[in-house]
Image (cartoon, rainbow, N blue to C red; front, top):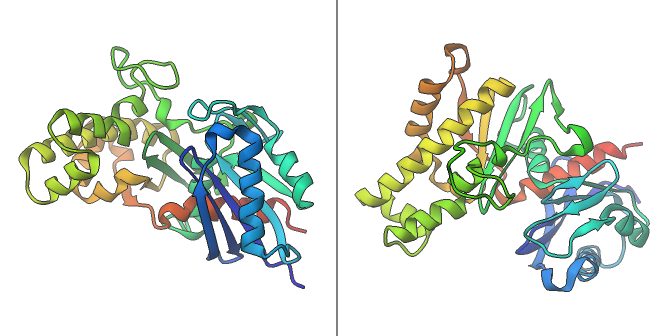
Amino acid sequence: MTRDLTIGIDLGGTQLRVALVDDAGQVVKRTATRTDVPGGPTAVIRQMLHLIADLTAGDTSNISAVGICSPGPLDSDTGRIIDIPSMPGFIDVPLRDTLAEELKLPVSLENDAQTAAYGEWKHGAGQGLQHLVYVTVSTGIGGGVIADSKLLRGRRGMASHIGHLMIDEHGPRCACGGTGCLEALASGTAFAERAKSSGFADGAAATEAARNGNATAMALLTREAEILGYGLSTLLHLYSPQRLIIGGGMSAALDLMHPTIMAQINRHTMPAFRDIDVVRAALGDNAGLVGAAALARETFAA
């Protein structure tokens, strides 16, 4: 049987998702469950194996490889999770080798935002480009960089922790332990906290109210866009991409934030960097699955 499918696994602190992905980047079939974080790594690996068995009906003969994407920090060179702050117990976990042994298949492990960047480059909003920056604005902020038609990995595969650019040294404490990180100021979590302080149920409610013309909600989104635009300006100077791709939950409001983001870019970047597209990601919550599968397919291609 032709081994024409790859398994993508997206490990998140809330949800664990697994998909079968073909060589065109299409999700053929996917399934998900709530991540058993309290059960620790052993329980989560058991969940992965169960979901894979469901998707494949126990037959992996047409599977070429498995790609996992996970929050970090993690070491993609050794395939080990170093420490996931949001998932207690996930410290020094040999995830890649453990799953490879169980499945008898080659397995790769990469940072979730980097795999999403790769997915968007290969099969989404970044197709055909040589240089792009992907930023996911969700519970936290992460990112990935394609430079000179290659995924920028860095030492141990830990490059592009975009959310931990320091924006304000007097700003709020970040989950990473730092102060004034972009993530602490502009993540979906930070936006939701500001929304609640202004009387909205959550960030989604504030965004909906902004679409209906609520002035307070619009001011909240303007502030969010100002912070994001400031951070994105730094990324333009660092990486000189052809396109900025925004993913994650907050990308649903990109159309409302786009004018302010562009105004910030024009205000804070040198003229040569201002000719830039800022677009919404095309793959939605499949970006990590597609990217992880594509990276695994290419890593282990015969």
